[in-house]
Length: 147
Image 1: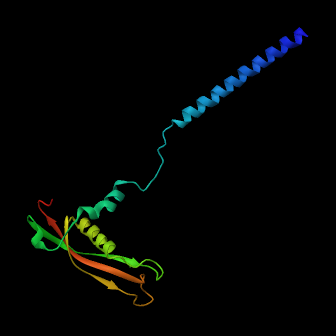
Image 2: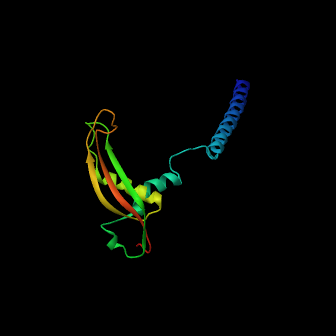
């Protein structure tokens, strides 16, 4: 009986050692692979998207050219449109149209804009992409010493 117990203890110790070694190898492999550098992630978070998103904030709105505090130069006329694609969707928004005009002014290199007006355009036939839209027009300026 003692011989059977001795053999059984040796077999269980050998299996325990193998199981411990296998567990150690698997754990080390997982730890090493979890620390590996992943360099193939693509997102829409790049400089160009940030510049596009925040560009309207760089263009200050003025009521008229008389409000400019420094020398200025008119860079061109700009417009922005906000479209209501379908009748059941939200109505076109003047604020969104003005934001698009500011974005266009920024692309010209402007830091100021004076809006001349906005117009609402309704559905004018089947070939229009918008059910209704708002278009805002303005003048883009580069103003020195703009705070």
